[in-house]
Length: 197
Image 1 (cartoon, one colour):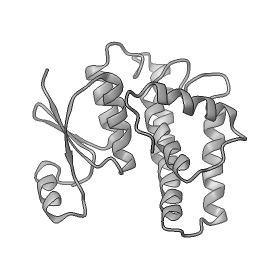
Image 2: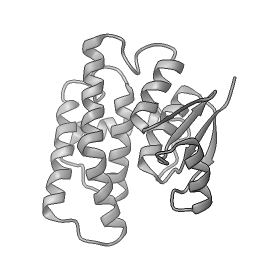
Image 3: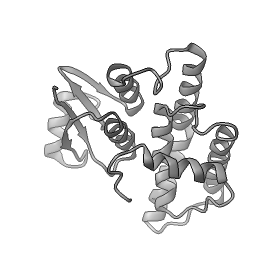
Image 4: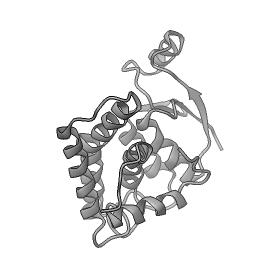
């Protein structure tokens, strides 16, 4: 079994779904801890990825960055079946929609709220309203299904789970969202050795 290199930092939310999916799939990575703020790390990363972002995956000479692209690649190449990334066009389109929701709105909204929280800065009412809207949308996704994109666990669950980890770290109150609470607890069972944040 060959080892893949992953340039990453576990505190970086975009890196976390990739690490969690890899654990779920039982994949071995050579983890290269990379701080984009460290000049030496930055130079090393720049040679591999001219956009110098993390996560960056190197799999047998194939170089890929952007966490959503890496999730799709790992699921297509290494999953035992197509349940994580369905081949059915309609099912797959729902997975894409959930990923784009996270990429376009939710991940950044939750991350900015967490950063404000960690810096002891007040979170504006406008920003809190955006967070609440995102949570309400995910609660709706989970109304009639156990996972965010339907009846089966998919890569969309891993990315949206990390957005909720940001909220969990800031002790965001999810009592009004029973579907989210149930799903969030269940997600922990899909990731071996999930370290408590």
